[in-house]
Image (cartoon, rainbow, N blue to C red):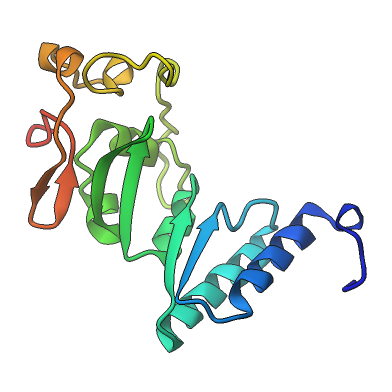
Length: 174
């Protein structure tokens, strides 16, 4: 299929080709934007395994941009969660999944289905903010279960506490 035109390839084939092309010259950094999109579960697992093997055997740094929490859990050491273009939380994978401190991160994790529990899938109420005219204060406050008046007027700073950075005024109460 090396001579095929792009329109002759499936989405998954194009995705695998892009991953192969990005790795062929052994770069020190790979930025992978939704690397498992359009791939079936078996191919996803193979790609994530390949990334992990390359990280272990070489000095490859991998920056993954994804909405798929299982990809983060499988391949990342450190995670940065963004909401409306701003960092709201940064932590190791273990801390992030076991002790999320930002309301958006908590909602994001609780909205992801799990085969390990019988819990119902949660959802994030409301709509994402208008990025042209974002809300005053914390961008997440219109959708937040922990909102207080300060959230509606001030943008919370990203506070670092022992390697766990969180932008929330109520981070200690959550």
